[in-house]
Image (cartoon, rainbow, N blue to C red; front, side, top):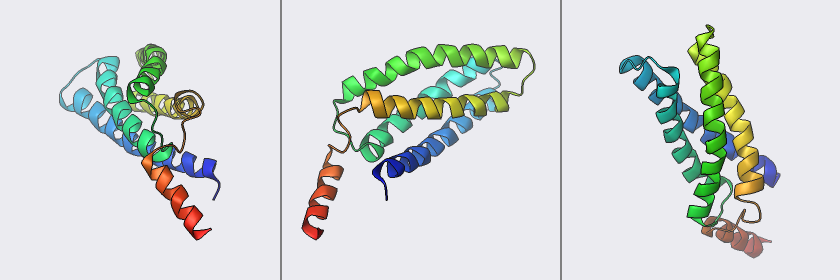
Length: 145
């Protein structure tokens, strides 16, 4: 199977799991704890999903041994732009009556696409398939091939 397709599938699956974390933590903070503000509920749920997604995608999707502080700093830069923008449009849309769950789903889809492209072409550029998992897979291919 095509390496890029496998990466996209892995990223999708990890993003789905991060999405579950984000939706569940948003619901907990917003609905259970009663935080009325959309963006005050959104920020902690986004942070939890980002940490989850970064950890698994670095290790298993991009199989990178890229410097963790550098990679995290680049992801933080992405979110330094994405978070204010998504908080702004989320508040603006919910203030005019859009359904909060619909806004969250749309925001998550935009995040999914832009973050995949950013991680693949910026964060891990030149450092994909460089970790121990990738090296073992390559060794196994060489032995079998």
